[in-house]
Length: 304
Length: 304
Image 1 (tube, one colour):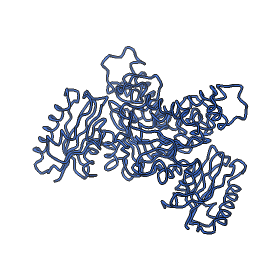
Image 2: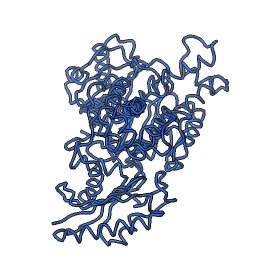
Image 3: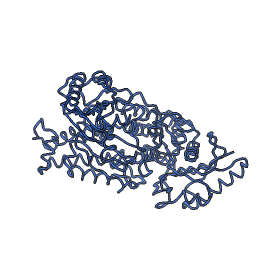
Image 4: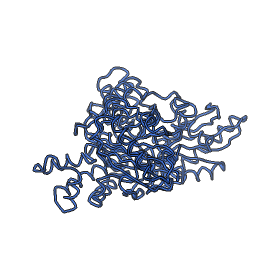
């Protein structure tokens, strides 16, 4: 059976797995991104994982590698100045995997990979104009217009996480202030929660905040409300640019369900230009957490 | 000689003219939009103009009609709730022109028409990913991605003028507050100038402010600086979405030249995500003022 390897590199976790063209994830492994001090050691570890997965599935024939990574450039095959990775400068990630695994390799931004996954296998099947928002360590976005993913002239379109929403707002990893992802992301909600609850443990993470919110803790719920309100506002502004039919939310924060979705939808409709009101649906990814990114990374092969 | 009629309906002026597929504007006439109380009387007057232009050019054969109008929907052929026109509700403008002139008729948003004009005949020839900003009565935008104009799922993409840039900011014609076009447009700069110069005549318009700025009046120059700074900031944010190679400014305000362009470029670069810095050019339309919109409106026929 022909398969491709999908690799999803995130600020926190890196997933790799074998994917069929029917959208089945045959195998999957998660590595903690930050336990690798440089790109080279991560590439070697991921490549070893993939070799092992192929051994474990002797019925498969590996056709190629698809990679989703933050700040990845599909045109140059490099990862450029990724603020949420510890790597420095420009990293030739496509070439590094080609040298390790000696197979056709394609790379794109992790959020664009998620959008490709939703388009081919998930909630965006059959849609021409939609937006996928990934709420991970940062906030990523993958935009489809006219049935095609928007790469932009340099391959770096879709950095919605770095739209400035508060002048002189929170310091961002990109060295500017007030970027959307400093509020609406796993790390953003931690900052919001700590502001609301100064007694919060120093090392609290978004998973714990989600748990507390689902348990009914008011500060955690308020953190979700504020996150949702700001995201809804930003999405309303963004709609005025590309008018998507559907916005798909994806990533760890969506596990809070309606605690996030309700304020997003309310703030979205309240801030929307009248001609768009009531037309645009906001929903949660239909794909299992890391599967969309893996399937999307794999889809790069099916596209090319 | 085959020609098409291009019609550009703006909040202030409506232009109509005969256009060749080589980008030549054979004839052009301007009507004041607000002197017509409803869409029907404007359609009749514009149609009469076009009939006269055809009579004056007996060598031409009229192939069809292309219309650019604010809030025009290419899918339905209607103009829906245009905040800068006195028309109410949904106006079936395509059908009204078809009934008057009995020729194939296409319609799109005025700013998208300008973008089509720049793409086919102007500063965007050969570009795949670019943005045209029209600084007229309002602020319009036409976005190209992957070599195609972005219409959005409902035909209403590109309302960058209605991105909210100031919460609780200036009241906008769309009934919300703080939209970009309440600051960066002909009407926006009048509001800014009046704030800076309370002695300004009540009925001062943007043309007079441009004249004063070019003459060296400080309040008028400051109005341009503020307008440019806000536009540069908004364009930097917008770049993070679609990463265009080029942004083309178009409309009356660009007559101020560097008085507008300099603060736009400075604010743009200062607010840009580092990966985009130094890559994206901002320039002024190469087409004569109303020609881009007319040529773009005409291009609708060449495309279809």
